[in-house]
Each structure stands twice: as C-alpha cells, then as structure tokens.
Length: 140
Length: 140
DNA sequence: ATCCAAAGTTAGACAAATCTAACAAGAAAA
DNA sequence: TTTTCTTGTTAGATTTGTCTAACTTTGGAT
Image (cartoon, rainbow over all chains, first blue to last red; front, side):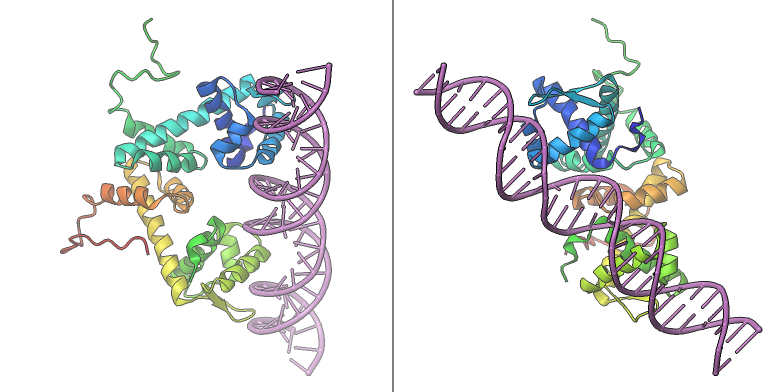
C-alpha cells in the first residue's frame, strides 16, 4: 500500500523482477543478482523488504512473483526507464550509456521534470509505436 | 588527489562549501547544515572525510576552506549543476524543481550524457564565446 | 534411490550516512 | 571578569545496503 517511500535500491530490485518476468517468464534470485551485479544474499534481503511492503510474493526456494500492486509500481518504474532512455538516445547518447543513466535518473526525477521530458518526446513518437497502456487502443 | 570516488553525499557537501564561500565569503558548519537540511554533526563528519581526501581545510571551531584541489573539484560539480539546471529550465521545468533535480542529476550522469546535454545547450548560449573552437575541458 | 552440484537462505560483519545527547570553545553581555 | 548563548565537536545509536561464510533445499545424473 505505502510504496511511496521505496528506496532507489528497492525500486531497482522491483523493476528487475518485472523485467526478468517479461523476458523469461520467471524472476530467479540468481538472475536478479547477476543483472544488478550484486550477490544473492542481497537479493534475498531485498525480497524480504518487498514482501513486507506487499509488492512481491515468493514461495521458498522459487521464483519471485509480483503482487497486483507490485506489478503496478514496477510498470511505472519501467515506463520511466523507457522514457528516459529514449530521451537520452534522442540527445545523441549511446544506447549502453543511455540505459545506465536512465537507470539512475528514473529514481530521482520529480514528476514535473518527467512530465516535461514526456512533452519533449511527444512529437517524435507520433509514429507507429506500439506503446503500452497509453490511449492507444490497438487494433487487433 | 584521488577524488574520483567521492560519494554523492560528499559531493553535495563540497559543492555547498563552495557555494557558501561564493555567497558569503565563508562556509560555516551551521550554514552548511541548514542549506543541506542536515544536523551539524553530520557536517562535522563529512568535513573530516573531505579533509582526509585533501579537499578542504578547517581550523577548529571556524569556517571551512577549500584546498586548490577542492576548489577545482567543487567548481566542476557546480558547473554541472548550472548546466543541468539550465537544461531543465529550457525543457520547461520550473526553477525550484530544476534546481532540486539538477542537484540529484549532477552526481550520477556519465560524462557522455553531460557532453550531449552541453551540445544541446550550445546553440542557445552562443553569446559570450568569441572563438571556442572546441573547448573540451571535461574529464581529467 | 542416492548423491551431488546448483540455487536459495540465514547469520553476522562492515561501511556510509544520518541522528540525538552531551560536552567544549568562543563571543557577547552583564 | 564572569556568565551565558551560540556554534562546533565528540560519542554512540540507528538505518540501509552490501558482503562472506555456512547452511539448506531442490532436482538432475548416476
């Protein structure tokens, strides 16, 4: 419920759970650790926190799942990441660096700044971009 | 010498020492604390670290001074701050928020991203530059 | 069916950054 | 000069996030 004060670190873990589930269908502790370049016990501790906050669930010795709330928060963070990465690339930053810097920026920028960056990106993404939960009701 | 690994926190303290000296001629512990919204003992501890790193000096119970190296590093951080704040304002962010967000961004962005932001700002600030062919002064 | 390696967990150490409380020094007032 | 207030310092507790080492569990190879 009160995810309003997620630390940068916990945001990173939550986002990574989401990304791994999107990519592999499952988020294993080992893979989270590898992706974030930390050791498995760090992941375990982070998962304990995220469970306390009601954002993830996990049956012992298995993959991490997202609660509905966790899904919501993770998607929000990931959207910020995608927005910022695209923004940096538009400025001419290389993809790898854009990804890395977006990863830092996504935790600290104010809503106002994010909004302005969105505005800045708007005109450009007026193309056939299969965006997510936007007003784009795709035609199946 | 080896300031390459200044933590975000220490960068903030160093920058604030510099700003207060520019504004008031002196950086007092009390004012640093107020400006960064921390308590005085936190400042004292940070100053101990910055002294160890050879970036500041201080006679007991008096204002904090910058070493030559400290001056150099602080100026670099402040320049980043100014660049980023201007950048955000150019995107339409309000001044107060631009200042706050610049303060976070200044510690995390890669040299590449900072360079691209500089490029982005260039055309606009083409005022007092007689002949700056390629004034590359980043990186050490 | 048993064993073993890989994956996950638990316990505890450590570092960074903050705080509160208590103490010390300097300046200002009396 | 002596007292008092402000400023600065020191000591130690707390929180967060990381690590290593040691353990437990799972599941595949034998």
